[in-house]
Image (cartoon, rainbow, N blue to C red; front, side):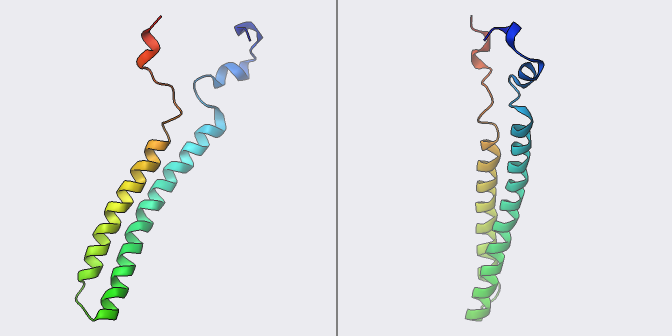
Length: 96
């Protein structure tokens, strides 16, 4: 397909991924925040339940809350890195 044959809509989507691609990336970024928060809440809740069951101080709540924080950071990082994988690399753009 020549450049003359492209419609303005085709030319506008080159390199941008289009409207729906941008919206999907936005949803993935919102999902990263939700994953982060839910991991921390799940860790704190499980720790609280373990502490209530074993009659201990908030040891398990602190430990599992910290593990939830680490897991949330890991999952959020994976989700945010996944949003940029389909973008073209600019490393080879200077080659003839």
